[in-house]
Image (cartoon, rainbow, N blue to C red; front, side, top):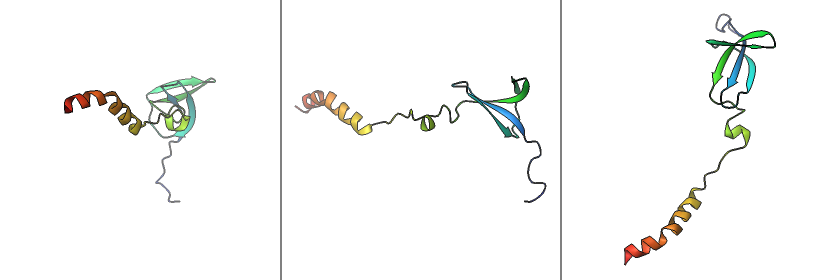
Length: 87
């Protein structure tokens, strides 16, 4: 590897998912404004809106949108109205 191109300030950082309050510790060079104490050790805290612990793709709680079913439902609902306007 080339010398001098990689950052030297890797440290342990806590990433917190704000949607479900899950936290995990990882090494990072990110600048953090907040800190948090876990097990007597103070870590920089990075707040995230969504992580793999809350993202629908990773949790399996993904909603599938059935657009064809929606169109059919709309057409069935307004079929009478459309027939009246054609007369």
